[in-house]
Length: 600
Image (cartoon, rainbow, N blue to C red; front, side, top):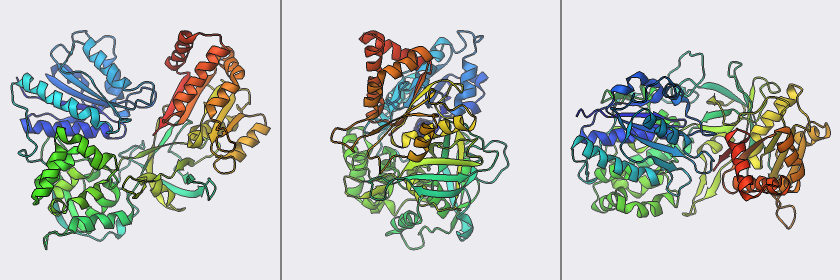
C-alpha cells in the first residue's frame, strides 16, 4: 500500500494547524509522505482517491466550523454524493474544543458522522481534546496520537515505536543568515509582505490606529479594564456580534531578555543578534514556508512579532532541548519530560506554575546555548491573534471599533508577576499607535430588529451587547420592551462599565436594565439571582414573545449559574417538571434562541 499520508485541518486560531503539523512531523520519522493543508485549500473532489486521511479541526462559536473549512464542509454536505463515495478511504479525526460551550467539539463529531455516511472507514476513535483540561488539549492529543501511530503501523505494516532519546528531531525548514540590517524601519510594519487584497484577513490584516485608551475601572479597583477606541478604514466592515482579531507584539524588554538568554555561554562567533537578517526556505514540498516567513526578515522581527515569548512550551520542546544539551544532568531531566510516563512531572514543572518558554530556556542553559536558527522555529510557537468582542455600533460609531478588555495580570505559583501578552500590549498602546487586525464573524447571531432580546453580560461580557444596543438605538429600533440587559459586577462605583450609557437609555425607555453589584452588600448578588427574581417577566418574554437569550462573559461558573436560573424560571412560571424544563432549554439552544459566548 502506498504510504500516502494526507493531513487536513480546519483552524480558526492556529491550534488545529499546530497539531496537524506535529502529526506531519512525526509521520516523517516513518517515511510517510503527504501534505498538511487547510481543508479549503484542498481539492475536495480528490478525496475519493485518498487511501488515508487525518482530519484535525476546531469548533468555533455556536458549534460552527472554522473559516478555512467552510467550503470543504459545504461540499461534503451535498445530498447528491453517493453513499459509497469514500469506501476506499480510511480516516481519523481529532477535534479541538472547549467544554464550557454547549456544542463541545461539535464540528469534529459531525465530520466523523458524515465521513462514515459516505462510506469512509474510521481507523481509530474520534479524539475530543478540551482546552479546559489542566494540561489543555495535550491531555487528549498526546495519547490519541500514540494510538494513531499504532494503527498506522498495522495499516502499513511498519514499526512505529520510537524512542525519543534515539530519534533526532527534524526541523521543518532551512534557516540561514544572509546578512545584517538595522531594526529602525521594522517597528511600525507588520511581519507579512504588503499586498493588495479586497478582503481583510489573517494574511491581509488591516491597520487600525489607536484613538483613545481609557481605564474604565476605578484607580483603586483590583482589575484594570480598558475601553480602547480604534480608527479603522471605511472598508473594514463589521456587524454587532462580530469579533475583532488583534495581533499583539512582545515588549522590547522581553525581546532583550530573549537574546540575553540565547547568548548566555554561547561560543564566540556563534552569537545571535537582533540585526541578523535571515532567510527561511522549504526542506520538503509537503511543508511550505508560512507566508509570514516568505521574505527575508530580521531576528528582531521574529522575536518582536512572530514568536510567542509568553507561551508555555509543549512536550516536543523538551525533546529538542534534550538532543541539544551537552549536560548529562539536563539530558536526563529533559528526556524524562519528553516521555509519556513523565507527563505528571512535566505538568508540575511547566503547566501548573505556568512556566513560559524563556523561563524554561533559563533553566537549561547548556541546551539553550546550542539552539540553532532552524530549531528556534521549532521551539517557539507563533503569536496567535486574540479575539475581542466588538463593543461599538457600526452605524453610531462610524469608522471606529471599540473593545472592552481586562488587563490580565496575576502571580504564578513561582510568585512571578505575569501579564497577558495581548492585553498588556493593548493597555500600553497610546493614541496614534498602529495595531494590526481583521474582522471575524462572531458566534452571536442576533434576530431581526424588534425581536425581544434578553442579554446577560457581567463584567466585560457586556461588550457585544453595547454593540447591539447602540446599533438598535442608531436605527431607531431601541425599546425597553425589546432590549433587556442583566449586568453584573463587584461594585457600583468601581466596575459598572458604561453605566452612564445604560442609565440614560433606561430613562429614555430604550432599555430595561437589571444590575447585580455582588460586593456592595453582605449577601452576594449575581445576575442569575436577578433572572429568578424577575422570572415572571422573563417567562412572558420567552413564552409569549419568542425572546432570544444571549450570554457573554467568563466561562467559569456564570454560564451554568445562568442556565440553572432559566431552568428554575421554566419550572416556577412555566409549570414544567424537571424533564420538561430541561427539554425546553435544549430546544432553545437547538433553535438558536439560547446562545453563549464565553472565555476563560
